[in-house]
Length: 177
Image (cartoon, rainbow, N blue to C red; front, side, top):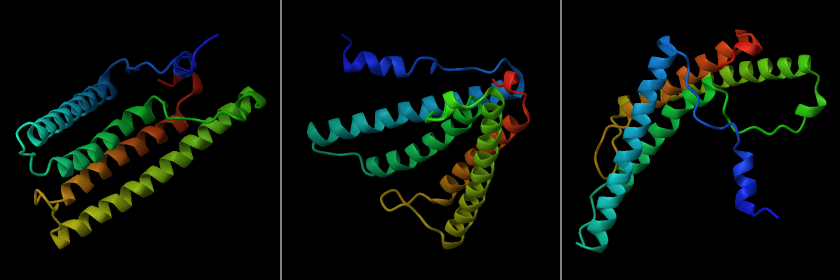
């Protein structure tokens, strides 16, 4: 009899890190990977120093929670282009087995197009929000960091994700990375 944990591992088969063969896509992936790894390490260091400071030295790091919030926002959206390019989003495949290969391809292309449009619209509104934050001079509460650059970065990562989804509309199904 398998345990619950064993069942969970079986659900993730095929979810290993995928890499593009080369060129511009591979360069962008490498840069995004480096950024995500750096953000994770930075968040871990901030949290560790804050916890040690708070409970051992009774001196928490000023703005630790806020900095982790901002870094986490960048981290999530910096990972989105890679996930989109390799089509590794979480998916529910309730109809997958009932569809013919032609309908499956049509479904994939339609979902890629809908994703591209939604991500492009989201990117536009995120950029507009960044412009509004810049015009107001909005700053974070604890660290007094300008918030507009974070919104702009998130908008750019979302636009890259939209482009990745759009490319999948035109790629042959067998050519998907």
